Length: 177
Image (cartoon, rainbow, N blue to C red; front, side, top):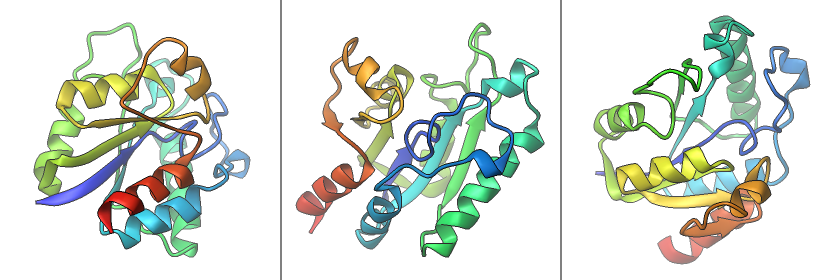
């Protein structure tokens, strides 16, 4: 069984920019590359799981989302970081979705496909959906105060709270070394 960190994308790995279509507008958040390197050195899988309702709303296409993901993967690979998988739900928030966070269908598949030990699974994000996804699956919940994190903290109290990915990575290093 493997240990893993499942990250949200927008507001956690990249700067929140609404329904972004142009890779030129993508900005990796400060501390992300350094944090992901530490997490990789610790032997964790690094997986991204994101709600991309812009597709279901008709505001963007699957290709638009894939272009952003490809750019992000390429950027991180040039920094020496390999993302082990990227998954997303296209569903808008008003339908009864089995794949949109905090629903657990996609993360259950991720756990099965990657043979992840739930006791060593961290879900990291900036929104309540990320925290409740972790709660729903029994993973460790991590709120980062990037993106919408500060607003989210006013509404819920997650298990772990960090200013950013690098701070979370240093915490992991402290308990897994």
